[in-house]
Length: 137
Picture 1 (cartoon, rainbow, N blue to C red):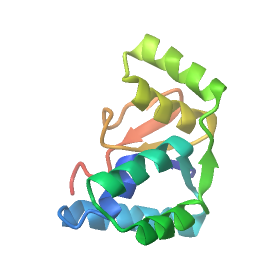
Picture 2: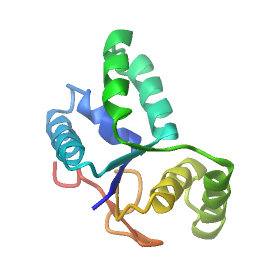
Picture 3: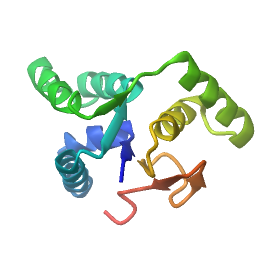
Picture 4: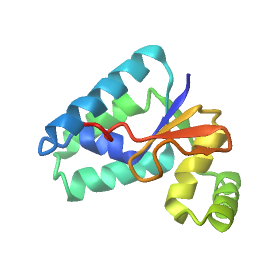
């Protein structure tokens, strides 16, 4: 089952100050990488790099290593069509625009699950189930 990963999963995988969330994020990334079911967007990668540089203060070589790993996942480009769909989701559901972009990328790529802690856990939106993988971490 194809699953979309929001930025927070990638960030927590490198966040040593949140060990339970770090373990859960690494577990999900490894499992979906092995199964070939992980999906990311270019937006997620951009956000990850920004947080890795500014908040986590990771060294550039490590960030490049992570990007090399994540580039092997199925990547959804942020296209004008994705942006238009996100705008519609924002207007109809009241979702923040950036969360709507993540959701629209998950919908457009045929994902059954969106792993995120930024939306309502358990919500089903346009066939995509929102799952907070840290709800019990």
